[in-house]
Length: 267
Length: 317
Image 1: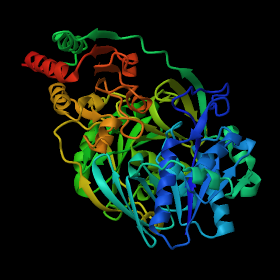
Image 2 (image 1 turned 60 degrees about the horizontal axis):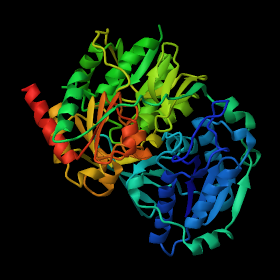
Image 3 (image 1 turned 180 degrees about the horizontal axis):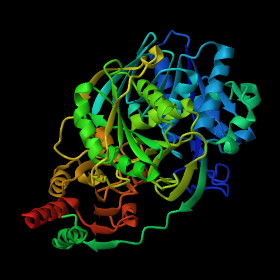
Image 4 (image 1 turned 135 degrees about the horizontal axis):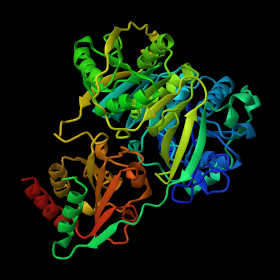
């Protein structure tokens, strides 16, 4: 069985995040890391492999991005993925969801062409930078596959996949048949830390680099120029004006709170 | 004037509030045309409501054949309606389902997609709030039919009668669309409180509750609010995940957000920073949440909230 986990290298949310002059996210001048939400996808791929011991299962970590993005793949390899693929091409920079999903889908096709059919494409529920949460569905659309998304629990048996998810109005159990696209939430299970052994082993794992040409993607189909959306302007939100902060002494806090809510007509 | 399609989000025919907000936004861009996908028996209730909130046209798609299948049949229905109507834009609610439908539709219609808009101007320029609310982004779709998902509470529903002309629309759904299926669904137990993402007021609790959400719930009920929780409270098992506000939970944008015993980590801020008014109660005066607030009380939520709740109930009395 072939599992491809898509991982994204994102600016560290606890550090500075900013835009460049062309309104794309600054991915080079800031600290980056494997998106936390993708760690859960890597974890689920590894758990699936462990649960189905005895089967021949290959977990491939796939990323698209500039040079530093390979760190996301390395982290996945350290956690236990078997091999890595990094799509790197200057023309990709500034791609929107459509461009990104095209490159990912073509890379999955290439992995399948070289190593046999891909049964499962696993993703995090969203990235921690753009946080759109639409790429899993788009990759599924481009690959012509069903999607089961936002899983908090994943179970498989043979080619059957069952997930549980917390919908807006109901908790649902969703079923599908592989091949399919699966996305998981942070509820699916804590992601493991790479062990020392894992870190050492990762250095010897295969890591391939693809260009757009390797994937048969025309540079004109992706990148900022081919984006079907245009960012007109980005602006740092002015800091919220400092609010009034009171100390509660002998019940004064409750009265002040009630007064504030009443003054804003919330009562 | 061109039609602007609005995919109706409903539960058994009861139209949810974010859809009414979309109708108000659609009116800015053209002629609001709602797309109702549901059972025939629920269509009447929905169409009446949609017309009352400005829908000029309502496409009704009977879902008898496609109920229980995920996302793709709705994509195909919208694709076929778009082919006939050639709309100026397609608006959906920024829910998990809304975004996934939009995602697949964008590829099929070769159209640009903007997610999580908090506003749409007359010319179609959207406003988004990104990086946990620290930046705003103005964007527009440059190719195809703009497909835009809009966060709940981004506009005020306007009660204004539209023609509400109903067109029964027969869709052809491919077999490939019927692959991923809802096997079982357990509706969330009714709490009697507003739904978290739709609520005008949200009262949330975090680690500082120590697991006791009674003061949170009592204040919420006094204010007619929804109850939320931080990731710390959910991870501790005090509240179910469906209550979680934050990047990996619900993203809310209410008129008033009251954070109690919540420090204000970036994950939480990403889920509530666009709230119009923010209030916090926390013992720790150094808590980062106080950087965001319009009003804050440094104090123990277990004494402040019950006292405030009592005063609020008296005033309402």
